Image (cartoon, rainbow, N blue to C red; front, side, top):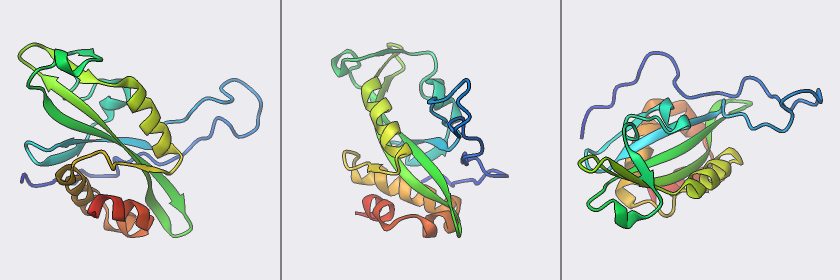
Length: 170
């Protein structure tokens, strides 16, 4: 397993501004992604890393591919997971509040990838609502995510709800 390097400063987004604070002006009802961070899980190379480009489908693993909605069009696709991790602030500090894992398949030889946009939207929404949607991920990928989140900031991991810890450790 490759060594996990913790970059300087926090890469996890923490909610700063709320466009829905009641002012009634432009942007009311708009979703804020300031507290959502995409973590890419690569089960083949056994690594996990943050890639903010995934918020706009421009992560390292998504670049230069045409995405299709049918898995059959991506034979021998390499599995990756994009996990939408929501971070929140509590009285004791920041913590991981929600998770939503989404499958993507990549075949670089044919420059094609598979992903389900409804799955991404729904699981990101679940994560933002502080729910956990990772039960469909394989155990090894969940363990990689747990190791990454725990190693990234032990305090955030320890302050996270047991539902998140249990979902990744089971």
